[in-house]
Amino acid sequence: MLVAMSKLRVRVQPRAKKNALSGFDAEGWLVMRVTAPPVDGAANEAVTRYLADLLRLPTRDIVMITGATTRMKVFDVPLSEDEVRARLR
Image 1 (tube, rainbow, N blue to C red):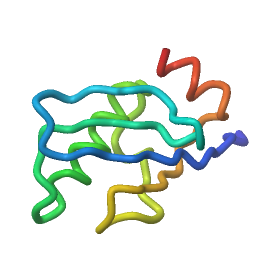
Image 2: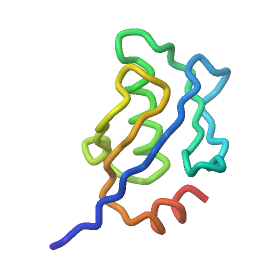
Image 3: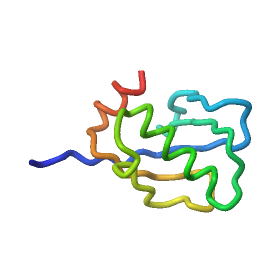
Image 4: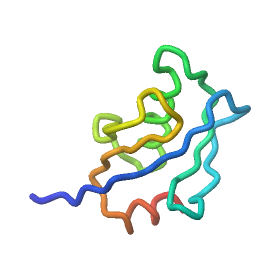
């Protein structure tokens, strides 16, 4: 079975009061807040878990490609862009 993969660009704000989505910005980045601090990969793990929950996928299917040490991250997800946007609504 062939699975459509999408690159999901996420801009993260760590140390927020609560996990939340702010939607897509003008440049197409998904803006996300997570409560975890950017220490020892905690924020990366929190973003991955939160994305998996929102997209109704197992965490193993959310793969960070770039951005392990920055707020701008790119993930591979096994969904089309349209399906990603539909699931995030």
